[in-house]
Image (cartoon, rainbow, N blue to C red):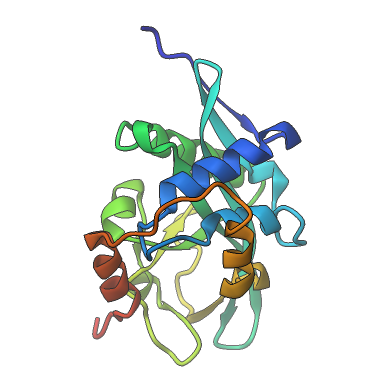
Length: 216
């Protein structure tokens, strides 16, 4: 069967299916439930959300994936602010994962982001999933979080080479990322029931999310 792939901006008619795909993709992956679909649900109304960088991937007319971007910021050692990007959730319908569709979405979105004048993307995730897309440890670019720590899960991609060179930076998320777990679970209770269960990926996530890079 010929694979007809199209990447386009998300429409209002896609909202429900995108939230459903996000929920299916993340449920029990990091914890025995998930909050990512709730983030998608509230993100679209936030001032830091970038609808022009909100994309769905269609396969033969069916939406099977989505990526969303929000604004974030860096502050240098002198307090100067730099507006940057972060993306997520990035989701692909479970039966289509590990087939290159996420890669297509990411690379397409990078091209569009660069065209809009953005030059840095910061994300938190498993390095195994992103180093192949050009992301590097935040330590390599001297980008820390408050307190001066370098999370192992924080990675950076320069869309314009050497953009961050010569400065020490501190990263700040958009406030939309500060999700109320209570509200997220309350929202999840309104949806079709999914079984909470343990998966080894939850331990992997815990270790990675509590690890920091030291030294050079």
